[in-house]
Length: 152
Image 1: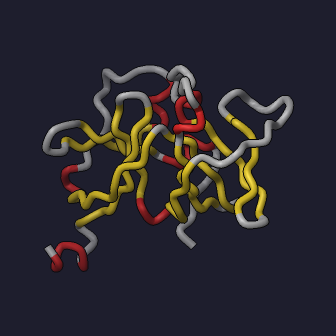
Image 2: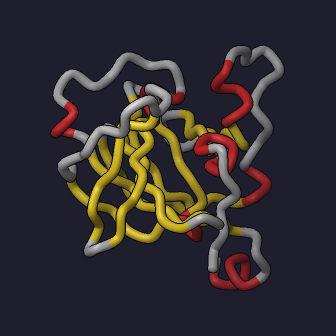
C-alpha cells in the first residue's frame, strides 16, 4: 500500500454524515474539525449560509450543508460540527451532522455518480465509492460552496 500512496493511487477522504448519508471531501482541503461554534446570523444571506463564526480572530463564513443539499435543518443545530476548509478566498466552515474519520480510497474505486441521480445535489457530487458496508458520496466541495478550493 505504501507504493500505491507514493504513485498517487490513494486519495484520503475526510468523511462525515449529513442526514443519514455518508459524505466526504478530499482531506487536502480540510484545515481543522471543530465542535459547534456560536453563529452570528447574516441578514439577507441565502438560507444555506448560516452566518459567521470567530475562529481565533478570523471571521469565517458557515455553510449549512444540510440546507445546501436540500435536507431539512438539523433539529438541534448545536449537535452539529464544523469542518473548516481552505478555499481560494480564505477559510470556510461547513456545518455537518457528525464527523467520522479519514479513509484511504483507491482512485479506481471512485466512480462517477449514476446518470439516474437528479436534482440540485447531483452537481455537487464528484464521485461515489462503495465502502465495506455503505456508499460514500464524495462532494465537489468547490461547487457545493460556490467557490474554488485550494490546498495551499
